[in-house]
Image (cartoon, rainbow, N blue to C red; front, side, top):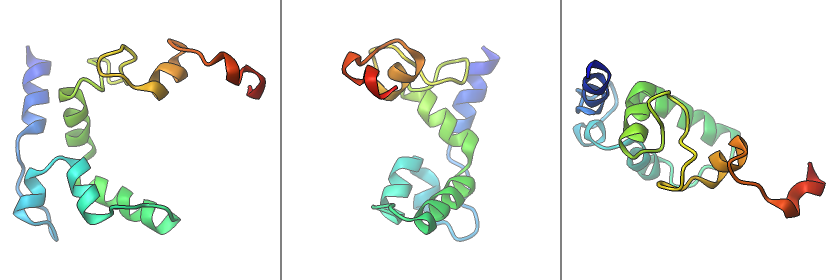
Length: 104
């Protein structure tokens, strides 16, 4: 389908942007972020991570997440059990934590 072709095109390597190595242009965002910022705990670190994501490309990240089954065709996080995403399941109501009811 046309949508699938667009998703595959987003996953294709792109030429490196200014300040990016060819290797970084070929890696998924999770690996690039881990190599550049292994631990993010400050506002400055998160600002740097957001800038890194913008340079990598939000659409490209969305394609990477879709390829792993974490994002569905509707663009939303998947809430099934494969792959299992606890936070998406809790947020959607697909799963509940009765012991946390008093915290709500």
